[in-house]
Amino acid sequence: MSVTEIMDNLFFIERGYLNGNHFVYRSEKPVLIDTAYVADFGQTEAFITNLGVDLASIGLIVSTHCHCDHIGGNKIIQDRSGCDIAMHRIGKYFIDMRDDWSTWWRYFDQEAEFFVCTEDLDDGDTVEVGPHRFDVFYTPGHASDGIVLYSPKEKILISSDTLWENDMAAMNLRVEGSRACFDMLASLQKLERLSVSAVYPGHGRPFRDFSGAIERAKVRLKIFMENPKKIGNDLLKKIIIYTLMMRKGVDDEAFFQRLLSTYWFRETVDLYFSGDYRTKYDQIMRDFFHRGIVKRQDGKLFTTVRP
Image (tube, rainbow, N blue to C red; front, side, top):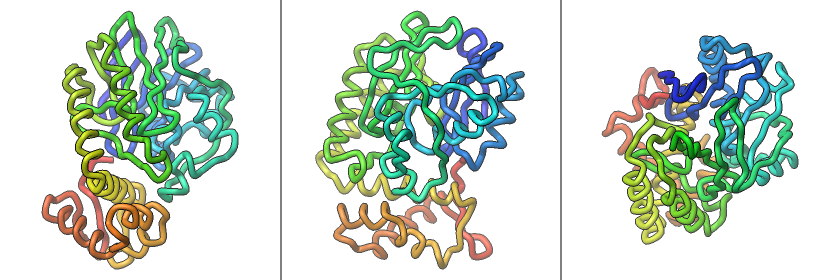
């Protein structure tokens, strides 16, 4: 974890692979952008309060999309502060309708809580974070309600899960639809017209090679679209690691059956690998053990990836 002041009193908090990065604007009515994963809320609270911000005084949370690793603290903070919460109008609809499928929560067997979304955002809107003005860009693909925030004055892009430095967020075509890769490509093409000096992603460290990251993501999308099995492999690997991190280690013997009980694992293997569940599981786990990404200890499976 690291904390960086990127604008006057606006701090970037870099987390890990499970918890989405987030932002804190320090003032009498503080603003948060994304609130990480609910199971690690104790750490989130510590990071925020260490900046001299009282959670009971939060005035606004901006959520870049409704996935569990970005909205985990929303309800807790809103219950304490009565704050407003703003997100894209599609995400607001999911939250208003208590749709735990489109948010990915039930589909991926994830932990999250509904909250009250008080403001909707759309492409072309602006968000005021104290004196800092951000333009809203709607960027579906990874998430139907995905947005990024861009400061034209400072040329800073808060890219959430639309753009990472060297990888790409999981593509979930079963929930997001068969056009998700096309939507993601259009989102990247929309962003590449911007003048960006620094990118603060949803996961990973800040970076400056904006155009390089865009090109790497476009190449990866092209590979995915030409060989859809790579989408399936990427999704299986990412969500297995997420599951191990969320559960803080799982029983080795029971893990396969646990995955088999979920919607996402069965549907992904059905869609891309003809329903050969055990073979696909064993193949992925062998690769993880070989690379040291997953380890066995006292009958438990743990991931070495930082949450």
